[in-house]
Amino acid sequence: MTWTDLDWPALDRLREKFLRGAAATEPYWETPSDLASYDLSYGERIGWKWDHVLRELHLRGWRPSSRAVFDWGCGSGIAARRVMSFFGVAHFDALTVWDHSPLACDYAAETAETAFPSLRIAQATPGLLAASGPIGLLIVSHVLNELPPEALASLRTLVARAESVLWVEPGTHAVSRQLGALREEFHGAFRVVAPCTHQNACPILAPGNERHWCHFFAPPPSEIFADSNWVKFGQRAGIDLRSLPYCFLALDRPPAPQAENLSRVIGRPEHFKPYARVLNCDATGLAELELPKRADPALYKQLERTKAPLVYQWRRDGTKLLGGEPLAPPPASPHSA
Image (cartoon, rainbow, N blue to C red; front, side):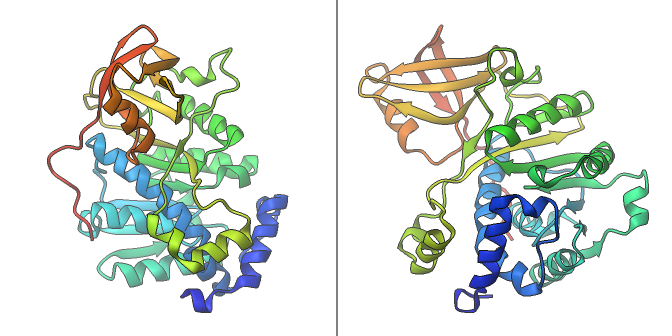
């Protein structure tokens, strides 16, 4: 699929269903062209969110230990392909895909086979879904606002069978807080790898913090703003190409030491002339912190311009930041396929 071949009427129909919430109540893939057009446009934007999540996991020094991947609610399969490409297909032996739409399963399997011909790829059977054996790395992407209670219950049983979980969702208030509630449900059996820098209860869900939600922003590739195809897509879809809010959860079972005194900035830093303000989450809870510009001009500027995940080790005095360093990546970089 290229921009020249893009099925604009199909994208318009999909957008209309997404906007009125029909995607949660009725099948929205009608042809393989629907999926191919979605994969090139809306799906690629989801891929940029996954890229940012995977970069943060690399900063945290995390790699999946399982060689099997299960992509639940796969859609076009963009999430699994991003994970495979980031860590390297040689790191994996098998990929299983599942979606309530057989068209989506076929498309996700076929595109993965084209991208990774050495990989064993299968579509999940009812027997596999009903079994109790381990499923390896579970990938879940952009499903929460579409799931009826019975589907969410089925997903919970798969999480219980997973060795690790990577879950990315839109960065809306409602969806983020729903994912946060699931974090509380799961983290007794798992270690929370990210976005949290601690294993305590989520402070955003504490009484008094109802207006907050755990969300972040992925940077789109800068070249799309000079690409007429992306500009046309953004205008027709009514999308701000600059804004890619998301929330996510990364869980793993094996115990592992976690870097101490790390903080994660929620949302975007706010910049004023004399200071920057961040909503900070760490082992002590949720707090609004201020960095006077004069205290660390370089850090003040970095917080405004960086495209890296905002994971920091601060030097602070109460709610005043005196300085800080971003988490540096480990020496060994991941293999790229």
